[in-house]
Every structure is written in C-alpha cells, then in structure tokens.
View 1 (cartoon, rainbow, N blue to C red):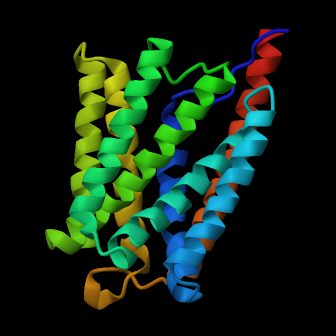
View 2 (view 1 turned 90 degrees about the horizontal axis):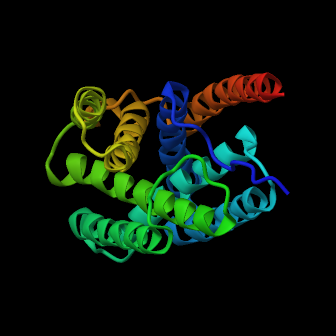
View 3 (view 1 turned 60 degrees about the vertical axis):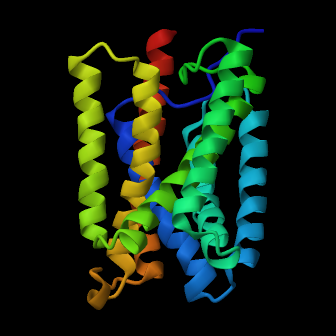
Amino acid sequence: MPKYNKVAQITLLFWIMKIIATTLGETLGDYFSMTANLGYLVTLIAMLFFFLIALGIQLSVRKYIPVLYWLVIISTTTLGTEISDFMDRTLNLGYALGSLILFVCLIATLFLWKKRFKTLEVYPITKKSKEVYYWIAILFSNSLGTAFGDFLSDNLGFSFLTGAVITASIIIVVVLLHYFTRLNHIVLFWIAFVFTRPFGATFGDFLTKPLSHGGLDLGTLNASLTSICLMAVLIFISHKKEKQKVLAAQ
C-alpha cells in the first residue's frame, strides 16, 4: 500500500491560510466565551471536543484533504485561544507565565519528535505516529501565539495594530533569513509558525475590540463570519490546486 502525504505543502498559500485561520480562531473563541457568554471553561471544553473530532477524522484518512486539514488547523487556533485565556483569566497565571509554560510544552514536543524520528521535517508526513506529534506541536504553538499576542497588548501596553506590526516584522525577518541565509529551514518554519499566530491573534483583536481600545469595533461575530468566508474561498482554491497536482502526477 503506497504511503500518501497527509499534510499541506509549505507555500505562500499555506501562510495566507494560516494567518486567516489564526484570526478566525481568535475571533471565534472570543465570540463563544465572551459575546455568547459561555465562559472560558465551557468554551474550552467545547473547543476541545471540536478539536478531537476534527483530529480523529484527519488521522483516519489516507491522504491530504484540504478541507479536513484546515478544519483541524482552525480547531487548534480556536482551542489555543481558549487555553491561553483560561490560563490567564481563570487560573490567573498571567500571559507572561502562560507564554513560558506553553513555550516549554512546545519545545518538549519538538524534542520528543526529533528524538523519535530524527528529523522535524513537516512535509511530507506519511506516518500517523509522526502526524500526532505534528498536531500536538501545532496546538501548543497556536496556544503560545495567542498568549504572546495578548502579552504584547495587555502586559507591554502596545496597541493591537502595533502588536500586529511587531509580529509581522518578525515574520518578514524570518522570510528574509530563509531566502538569503543558510539557517536551518525547519527552525525558521517553526519560528514563523509560532509568530503567525500572535499576528493573527492581534489582528483579530484589532478587528473586534472597541475604538477606545485601538480596535475597529467590528465585533467578534462579524469578524468571524468574514474570516470564515475568506477561508472557504482559499480552501476551494487549495482543493483545485491539489486536484491539479494529482492529475499532473498521473
């Protein structure tokens, strides 16, 4: 039986979809926990079930299917928002300590991944056991990104737009390092992956927060619906590209 790749290829489309997915995760998580007034614990449990169901379906299929893959990504961004907010606002750990804990969890996951498989390559992934490490690392990185984005705005006092500019600048530096240096591309990928999350998180806050807090006051529902529509279009494009790739390989 041939081994099929299970995850998305790292292209410009991937990074655009990742940023929009993180924005959606931020706004959708805030919608359920705050706007719908479900609270952080109830929303955390609901998003955990959503993540586990989406992950179970993703692990059960034999090949990369864009809509399933990005559904898991969205579930990790939404769950990551609730994990960060629960640690800060319910457990009162604060964003700084929360970020540190999540960073340690991410490094530990990557360490165990590297120890078992001798590499941290994220494409292609054909083994289910490696894919589990992949998704755990993504969940921790998205949770860390949420906490770090909130740390920039709440603890350091940056506006949401300033926070987005800071994280975007870091991403641009990583891109330049990728193209103009010989630094390890796997390390650069994970740095970029982590920082696209706070960029999406701070941009989501910028869309939803009141004008008095430096936001555009679109509300969590309108911002979430906008992000869902954008993701739907991009997933459609991704499906077309994947179909063309399969036909070209035949």
